[in-house]
Amino acid sequence: MEIVRNLLVAIVAIEHVYILILEMFLWTSARGQRVFGTTPQFAQETRALGANQGLYNGFLAAGLIWGLVHGNAAFGHQIQLFFLICVSIAAIYGGFTAKKSILLMQGLPAFLALLAVLAIA
Image 1 (cartoon, helix red, strand yellow):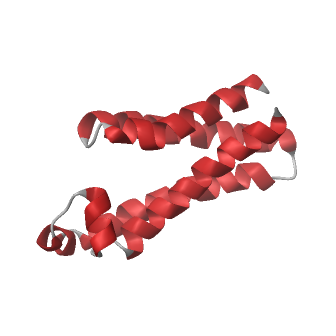
Image 2 (cartoon, rainbow, N blue to C red):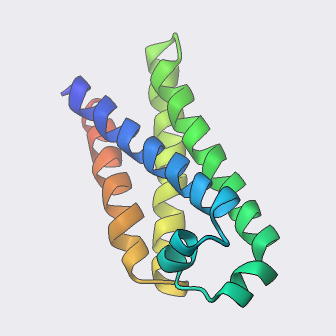
């Protein structure tokens, strides 16, 4: 079960590194515009906003990775729990205010990882 938990937490971390890359570096690219449903003009005008969002997603990924590699397993578990709750709340908020698909794309992996972390408590 511990392997499953670590794998699920790692998936959430990797997903947020990918979001960081999309928002910080590919926001104005065709791929970034397709993912976020923006126009070239809007993407260019909101480039700094996208980068800021990406930075926050990077912090979430860093926290999850920190929780996975922390030398004290009990403290690492607490770190994972904190950051998974943060991701879950962000997914719920984003799902209701921005795009419903956020609940599935970001929320579902976070919720599954959160359940796995809680199951090992």
